[in-house]
Image (tube, rainbow, N blue to C red; front, side, top):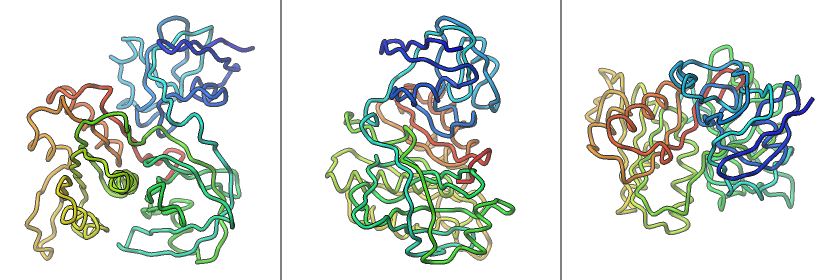
Length: 340
């Protein structure tokens, strides 16, 4: 059995098989809806059901609240239609012409700028390049059929090597392998690019970039892409971490601030250590943004990192600082199906 899914206001129609999520069906048919984690944790794919019936599927409460469900909202990465459905959603046009590929790659270099962070540089086969948008991610394909998703930290123009920032999660299937077994010259396979977290270049609004932990990776791609294309939009990067050493590329970000007048870097530590001599900002990274901005109605927000941070930022920025919902772009790094 199949069901017809119609988008509004786009007016596109596609078929969803029984048991298939709305997002899966849309992507299969070339209709790109906003999405991030694809497992009900980040809320990036949230939209409204205007007509028809759906099953919400498995999701995390912070991504789709009871009030959301009462208002007719759902997460398209989890929701499965039970009839023909019309959905209200912002379609993404910029990714539609970029092919998703499954490719091998060679681990060219492994660096560990922090005890629990590895930076992988991956080399594609001769003559191959991966087309992607700054901020998107790839999925590493494991031998047992499982996948692990990691954001691309290099900018699209700087594509000799693909760069991934991987935080070690104790007991994590892939991250344990990276930190304990993976060697340079090893061969991995990946699929990508994926995701609708990318720089919207049709706007001239200032950018406020908010990262926690390795959420810095896709924002690094966005920042370096903006510099390369000589964007004139002011950018402010807030990077939050538990301790100073967790800001594993702080010198790079500080260098950007010294070289570009329109770029500001604000590191934020939640648990400063006695021996660090930390004299910078402390607390939660989203609170630092709230402290600095009384009005966010004229900016775009790009938030990436822990789901709790992304959810808190979305809620507080829109409810307390006037940020339009459509100007909040996010990628929440979840562990349910992907250790990013």
